[in-house]
Amino acid sequence: MIRFTDVQLYHWVAGLLWPLTRVLGLIGSAPLFSQANVPVAEKIGLGMLLTLVVAPNLPTMPDIDPVSLPGLLILAQQLMIGLIMGFIMNIIFMAIDLTATLGSLTMGLGFASFYDPRTQGQSSAINQLFSIMTILVFFQINGHLLLIAALADSFTLFPIGQWPSHDMLWQLTNWSGILFTAGLQLSLPIVTALLITNLTLGILTRAAPQLNLFGIGFPVTIGVGFAMLLLSLDYLARPLQNLLMQGLTYTRQIWIHA
Figure 1 (cartoon, helix red, strand yellow):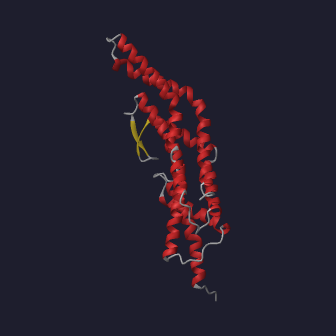
Figure 2 (cartoon, rainbow, N blue to C red; figure 1 turned 45 degrees about the vertical axis):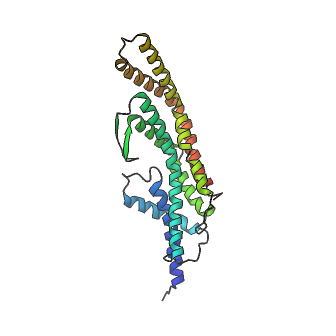
Figure 3 (cartoon, rainbow, N blue to C red; figure 1 turned 30 degrees about the vertical axis):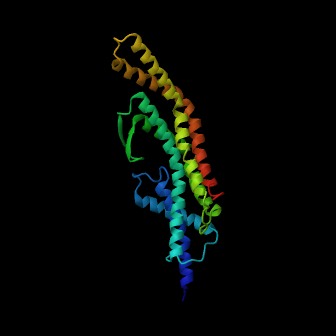
């Protein structure tokens, strides 16, 4: 008869529970994986499948009872690590979403909004266009595979049971600044062109007060905005790819100095 000791049983449970918690934390917060239209059963099934793949190659885990207080602290730590990795990639997607928001508001299309299942909020047509482009570029660079590879490497770079340094959260806060810098830089062509257009319209209405600013202003700004979108679409793929690769690289590098 095969017999198991309590220590062996705790070790087997911890060997699956702790990695599964980190994997589910990533799936529950990362872009595309965490969308509401993805069934919960499929998310859990994907998490269990990834855990079974990476579990045999994991470093030695601490010999701690998983239902004790230190074991529960490690469980919460693994959840936090997965959430942080998903949060890093969400920052990139939110930066691109900010680009579309700035462009649509400047064009005057802020009122044309509808429900976005990815963000579970209201977004404009320009936001949807940029969202689709970002997803296509993300799959084109195999971002989903690189994110899973970064997750698997995190178990080696930051083993289970190791606690992060105090400045890791400060590094993460500094990283979140890319939300505003990248969003503003990508939206500069559209915002600058529409700023010049609005200044021109202001000079025209000042020189000819009989012109109806509201009658000609909206069609002109919307037309210029769409023209700038058409001209800049060919050049957006490379910045989007670089931005996504920067996020994927940081999901791996943050654990090196943690």
